Amino acid sequence: MAATHRIAAGTAIAAVCAASLAGCGIGTEDSGASAHGSQRAKEAPAPRSAVRLIGDGSTAYTGAQPRLPKPERLEPGQKPPQFVVFSWDGAGEDSQKLFSHFRRVAEENDATMTYFLSGVYLLPEEKRDLYRPPQHSPGRSDIGFNDAQGIADTVEQLRLAWLEGNEIGTHFNGHFCGEGGGVGEWSVAEWKDEITQAKRFVKTWKTNTGTKNAAPLPFDYEKELIGARTPCLEGQENFMRAAADMGFRYDSSGVNDQVWPKKKHGLWDVSMQLVPFPGHSYEQLTMDYNFMVGQSGTTTQGDPAKHALWGDQMRDGLLQGFYRAYDGNRAPLIIGNHFESWNGGTYMRAVEEVIEGVCTKDDVRCVSFRQLVDWLDAQDPKTLKKLRTLKVGEAPERGWASFLSAGPAPAPKGVPGAPAAKG
Image 1: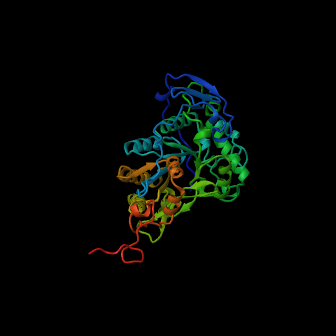
Image 2: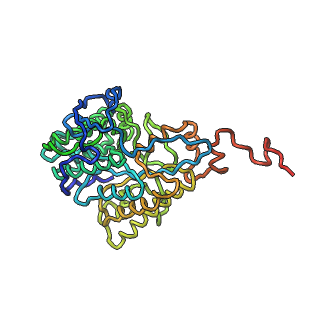
Image 3: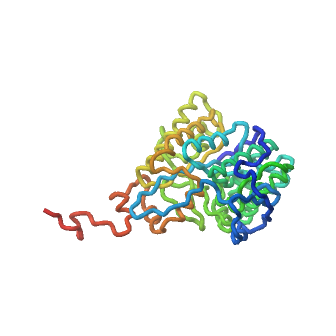
């Protein structure tokens, strides 16, 4: 996975509270609780209208997240819904305004998504030495840092995204890949340090930018942050060990077939998947960067005459993967992207067309990873174990009602134990 380009300046953010935060009583709260707010979880819940600032006021507790559905357990014999997760690596708002654009696309198509924020996108260039990356000198980042305007624009999008029911995960910080200090070489302790720093940059963006009057991010990041995707999909093993100790619930850093997820090191492994690659004899990973490499190599602006074709290949490959699951084993489809205009923006067009083509279909839920793992955790483990027996594209031979029935499936006619035929 290539490093996402440095965030550029965008539009100014109004230094006022978001609508849901206006006119609320504001208090302060120490942010030093253990991972995911286990200490605060014992406190009485705040009134729904209350806003409690955390630390320097960069983040705040504002109550339960809006539009977060309560997961329901499948009834016996019920067909599972078709989940689709659209996720974005290194999410930030720059001059292309793709973050705000896809927020609108999601709204228009009854979808929520996961935005994996790079912590350094909330750290200004002049404060770069605050970042001390594992195995690198202070202030080093392969994706650069940000400026005041870029941070303000990104914070605005993060705030609005969360209030709309989307999830804010992490893509960590400096995006180091390959040999010579890449994330694939990091120890469990180094991953814990990187995670802690990614949280800190989110929780102190006001202090680091000298901002005083802007609205806070409307969530407690210690509780909000439950999952991630590693840079270049490297270092998953040690990251998962670190993340499990720090209260994470899932990881999406691997490569898998279109089958139902299972847990690894105590985390849901919701890795991206291999889907058909039109025009090729092999399958491709469900990520814009990987389709690009399969088409123009590492050149991000290849032959313009092929841009439309390349976008169609990604769109059609994702749609073939979707229908393979939708008409087959109903395994969740996991898709990863970047806010980039590679090959003329053809992959952004492809993703948007997939969203429009699948998210409003019957029995389809385009959700965040948080919503997906909430649903998985709500299911009977025996049901999930049975779903995992279905192979790629394999629908139950005797139908879903029989496959997920509470009792044993009836024996086929003509075999031992089957009822005698009448007449």
